[in-house]
Image (cartoon, rainbow, N blue to C red):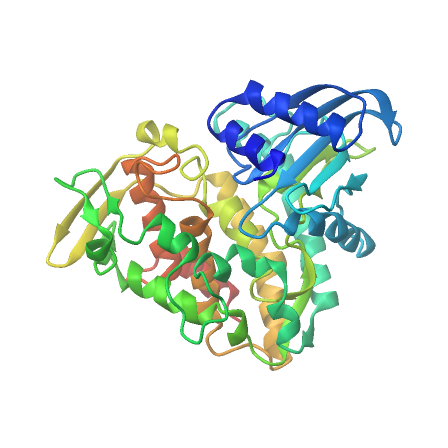
Length: 435
């Protein structure tokens, strides 16, 4: 493991001082910076990252403090891609924070930015939801999101074109979806692997109300009834379908593609004030951006993570035992779940602007050009389903989740991936964007 990977893992273990000392040595010896201090900034959103502030005795690019970011998942190349993708978005006229420099060596791919004092949109939204001082009102925050969605929606329409399948199939965005489902993306027949296997297959699942945990074999084959709505699929069926439909080799040929960020969740957005005092957003961390993103995949991550992942249950799961009332029971092959999660006013407004300014015009134009696949709804639903289930382990006792957040999270994932016999917020979303 590289020094950066070791430091990142130390942070996950809460050994912050050891990680900072390792980073200080790396900054001095490897980056050859006159670094005097390292302050790490761990948070609930940086799941595979190490980031913080380097204080310098001798300035670098005129800066005495630098924000650094190291990102590593199963594929180490994404940190360098962020440097180039920032320039791609900047050249396209989208608001983005561009790194000052990048180190490209495998395992040591680190980015250096100017230090910002602006908050991330994720932190402002969380403060608003908790009734705390946020520096921005809810109305300002919603308008800033609306303005960005208008700009992004226009850019999608401006850049919408077709490309041979191999071009969008090579985009790094698939790392967040299909490549987390399998070990061998080139296998003739998909086999459970990646995070699907390491997170869930062969594991036990504890939910409030159950006398004993369910095995994966049991849970994967149960139908779900959530708050009285019965869903068509089992978890096992959704994962199996996702392994087929989300495979890059299954993209249409030619494929409708757009230019975009791809992973613009609210922790990858700064919120700032312009010269007139109005709130505006700027992209950060475009590690998965591209000029040929599959058009149906481009807005999936921000749609789920900025809306359905809140309030609190995904990123701050320790708090949900006080926020939500849940219970589960198994009857006649059906897992009956009752919970009181729902979109709050802030997230409902975010969803409305996504529908109006991004999804609806994009799908309408794709259809007008005769490029909308017949299975577009299943594709979107399954991609949304993969967001919570593969970004972190939702199983209670693994990573940061507990029985309450586990059953809430898996219920929301089921709602995303499967149609119910009664309308829910996801089926309404699908109806609203259907061209």
